Image (cartoon, rainbow, N blue to C red):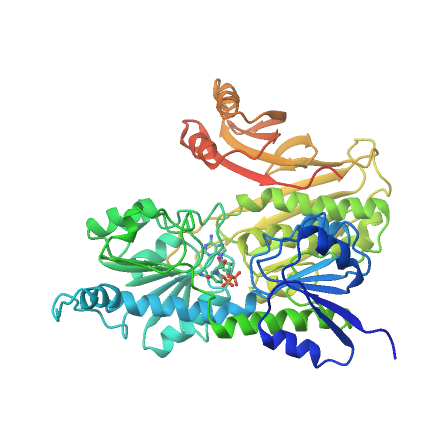
Length: 551
Ligand code: NAD
């Protein structure tokens, strides 16, 4: 018999996953939770797979001598405890089990919505205090109400299905779904958050936290909501601006807010949200059910074996397990494609209708498919929580109605000395060109970025949105669009200086009375600095992107 796959359970896992592994004839299970970093590092290389929860930190030191290790599976969602860069560098695939907690989290959001509508929290509290008040807690019925689902991914859809079964109308906002309606026409889709606000009696949030979703529901958006709107956030803390909640309730814009997630977890003991009678709080319980724990344990075990047996990849968080059989120049363009797409990803604020790749140079033709997929991962990953990789990304994009097109243009072959000819990659992302829902104002959002690899094999970005430049995309970068007038550059320099963030390099390009500054920074700037810059007169847009170090 061939050698068995050795699977290390390095964290305490629910029995379902362990029992499954024990039942497999080609598996030897090593169940050793609670090892220290050095102990784990010493034995990890003897195993083909390792399964962890959040209790083990998989550092670069743990992965330094990976031996036969091919996959690390996280039984759960967050992979903050795994050094993804180290795993990727060693060709180790990292997977998570995000899907296993979808229903559990959707049910929690639903429970919060019901509890909010019927005042279950304050009514229960009054009972524990000896009261019997039957008028104070008059609630609201869900049937007939309109639920606005913000983020129509796995959890958002699961909440929507349940809401429809409760006789609710459902409308949804998700700029990354290119369709006018969903669920057989039962859910009207909106491409702009502001269009959803006046329609919903209840809003529920199911988006990742990123530049576009931070503070999505804030004082201004609360004011555009239906009077008395109820709000549920079981996605990520910060999507609903905590500082706006009490004001919106006291002003009568909002009838109550239920939060499972917070800007800082745990929130401070004296956080006023904890005491407010119209705020219902749970301590990040979205995924905390017996069923979800069993499901993530089983899911992680199955993912390991599927991969080890060569049957496919499930829930990959990196693409570390994939070999790219390309020559050096092609590999450079694959890497550049990912850098370029990450760089423009934060500029995509109104969704993606189509992505075109213009690949110039026959020498790149063989790599076109890989370039396309790598770029899509960079473009879309920041906007969704589904782990994307070059295996699944095309499927995910097509499933969302995003049109993809690759044009290969003929040109000279090899690397260039800097002249106009030679291989080149342009990525063109188009936002929705008109009103998908019949009400949204038309507005075409086209983003274009062009990159090259010069003779020194270093990657360059030569154009962003018709601003021309010559810049190596690597490390922490800030993109600042501003009015092209005196004083702005000085102000930006002063702001970075006073925040102790060193500007290592700077490229400036101008057109149509505006300019684009691309700064290379030695450190990640604090959020407060970004907010301050955005508040300055003359600054139009600010985005910060963290790219890998120069290859
Ligand atoms: P998902 O990736 O399947 O769905 C997220 C959706 O948000 C995607 O459809 C994406 O297109 C959409 N989106 C991205 N940017 C948007 C924007 N600016 N405006 C509107 N929509 C936008 O993820 P999921 O599995 O459904 O998870 C949703 C959220 O729930 C995530 O933030 C996840 O971390 C969180 N979560 C919380 C718990 C908990 O314990 N409370 C448990 C699991 C997941």
